[in-house]
Structures are given as structure tokens and as C-alpha cells.
Image (cartoon, rainbow, N blue to C red; front, side, top):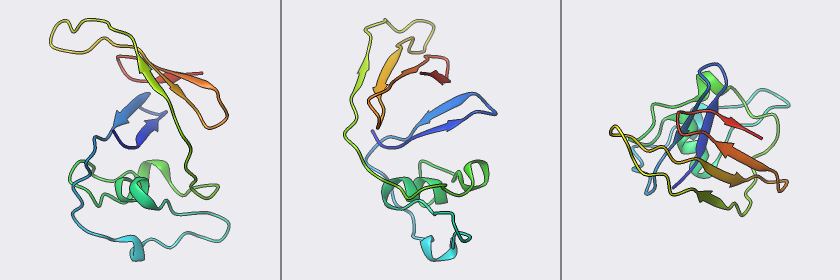
Length: 111
């Protein structure tokens, strides 16, 4: 799996699956204002909408406040059985500062 995207206005968490189906590269069309940053790498492709799995999230998220960085994450999910045609798993993600982020099965998250 690839980048997670959180939208606090919709209280929604989106998961974009790998492999990314790259449809173009529009990175040259996105110049960040001074003091802000445009995402790069895989998340940049998702943010700009340069993949088939994403319409792009630059309008919803805006510009980065810090440069993008990578880290080794750990994702662990419980074994809740699917019911009613959907997954009811609660997952836990280790964040960049070793915080644990709970990902709710109906969308949303909390520390």
C-alpha cells in the first residue's frame, strides 16, 4: 500500500494501493509559494492526481508546511471479520515520532 491521505473536513482517511498506475507527470506545473513545499515522490503523484487511483488532493490539502520525508512505518490490523460487505478492521499505524495512530474502520483516525 502507498500513501495515506487524511481529510479532517470529511473526517475521512483514504488508502491508495500500490502499484501506482502513473498517468503523467505534472510536477512542473506546481510551484510552491515561498516558504511552502510541494510534495514529491509517490505522495507527490497522488497529491497532483498523476495516477489512475487518485483525482488529486492538492486543492483539499494545500501546500506542505515542511519538506516531505520518509520513515519506516509499521501497520498492524486486528482480525475482525468482514460483515455486511465491508471490512470492520481497526488498524494501527506507527507515526514518524513513534506515536500510534488508530485508523477507524468507518474512516477517520485518532492518536
